[in-house]
Image (cartoon, rainbow, N blue to C red; front, side, top):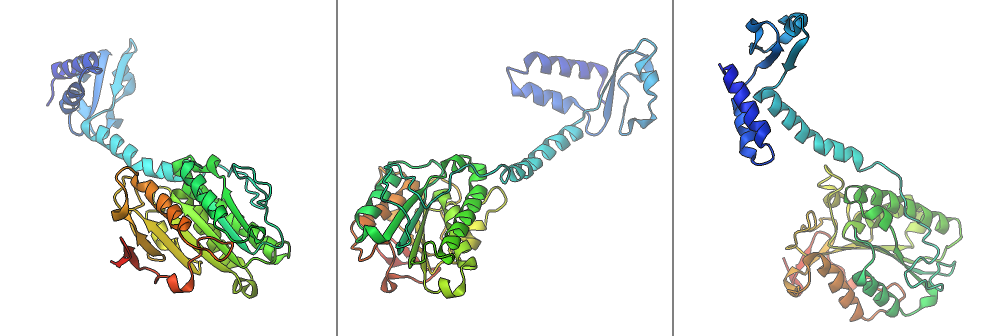
Length: 352
């Protein structure tokens, strides 16, 4: 049994050196008994000093406090400290998972008007628009790489009068990494519903092709939009609209516990879904092929001076710039170029 001297020595050493050495805290921890509640007294009956019990209900607290009111009760032991630490650690994922869906969407989502950085007033979705391309940037918002993609998509299209290309600015919601996936799904669902409304109500009835591109965490709104359109468009309208989903190094984990969300959901609802993949970058939850997509693994083609997570976006932009397009929806893969869902193409087109 630990003595009173051991207690006071451990406490004194710990308090005097708490800011200089974590080893002192460990010394204090191991000086504690394993499972007892310890009672200290400053002015009380000597017989109760340093008595320890698992159940403090037998103590008369008025006796412990003494007539002079100087009692102090400390309920800590190794077991209780370990329980507290373990409980705290285990509660963190739960707290974060509850935080992820909290809050409302802050981004402006009127995709039928131009919100492009270049304020191109001609980029408006009209009732004669046939080819639609919607891009969702990653967590960092628009940058030079997304600007380059946007430029190529516009420059390479054949007919700008019947096509519409839109980079959705959802940076107000994508910056918070814990909430971005959840809010991204909400945003994609909302936009899918808005597009469906406009098509079915005859406001924009001529749409033939919809190409949705998701970059990194932008995969969540991109996938949600595609699935919303696929599930809610009237069958007679849906069968006449081709929907393609392109994901560029997509982030696949939703919030904290949804580690399999991307694997189970990304690619569903699209007529064709493709994933451009880099596997050797440190960004978590981006290095695995998606079973509901045709995957192009371009890791081995990456130049050393390009960060791995940026590479799929840069590669795809260069690929589009060197590919002939015969319609307004740049990047649509022709039937003869489509790969089987779940298939992984590696390097220069070699099957994996």
